[in-house]
Each structure stands twice: as C-alpha cells, then as structure tokens.
Length: 197
Image (cartoon, rainbow, N blue to C red; front, side, top):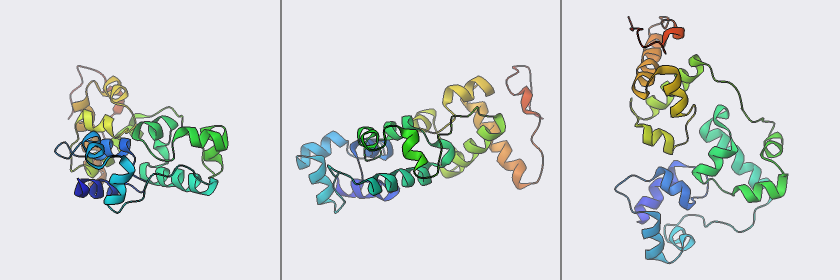
C-alpha cells in the first residue's frame, strides 16, 4: 500500500487526495477504501508513506501555488475548474472560491484566463498526439476520460467518427510532422465515405 501511495504521489505535484489517487492508481494497486481501512484515515496513510498530509487550512499563496502546479501539469489549454474538481487536486474548489470568489478570479491572480475556446481539428489532433506519445502510443477511452483530457471523447467522436479514427488521425499527424509532410484535408474526416490516402 505504501509503495502504491508513493508511486502515485511521485506522478503529481499536488498533495495526494483520495480522488487523485483513484485517478492515477493502476488497476492492480489497492483501492483508496482499502488503504483507509488499513490505516484508519487517509492522512494517516499518507504520513505512514512519508507523504505530506492534507491540510485543513491554506494560505492564499499556497492556493495559488497549487493552481499553478495544476496548470503546469495539465497545460494551459486544459485549465478548467471542472477538470480541477474531477481529478481531486488540492486545495478543493470550496477553499478556492472562499478566497477568490470565482475560478476565473483565482486564475487572473496568476495572469491566466480560463480557456473556454472552440477547438479546431488541428489543435485536437495535436493534443491527442501528445497524449498518445505520453502513454506509449495508445490509450483507452476509459483511461483518457479518467485523466480528464481535452477535447472530450464525445467531441472527438463527433468530429472524427470514432475514437479509433481520432487516434489514427492523431498518429498520422505526428508522423507527418516528423517527416515534414502535410496532413490530408481535415474537412473530410467526418465523411463516412472518405478514405485516407
């Protein structure tokens, strides 16, 4: 259990919440519930693993530092309160809103803005290509969703017909970039009669 806690903690720069652990733990590693049963509390488990315990109070500086770590970890294009909440980054949403009123206000203290923008197919393929590289060339839809990556699976399916085709296009895009070739016309990717050359 301690090995699993330390492994997952080494992946993220945030204090390890139960949600973060669930997001990054491998299927064969003990569940957060099993860990709590064994140690009594989540904080006690963290302390036994030599990891920082979850704090009850945060200073404004600590909150901003944590949000900056979140932005650095996921990239500015991924920044959203929804993702922050879903993965279980700390401090929690309530603490941030108590200090700053809104997520946008907290981001503005870091010189950032929320990236609610309309995605392009080119941007989506670039993002997906980088994610595939990070995961050794492939990632399941379940794992992709678990990590809270953007654009969403439903967006990719809507624009590329299927999850499999989106991944194929993203890999082709990466291949074209490394060989200095151009990607075929992306306007045709949602046409069921369209065939890749």
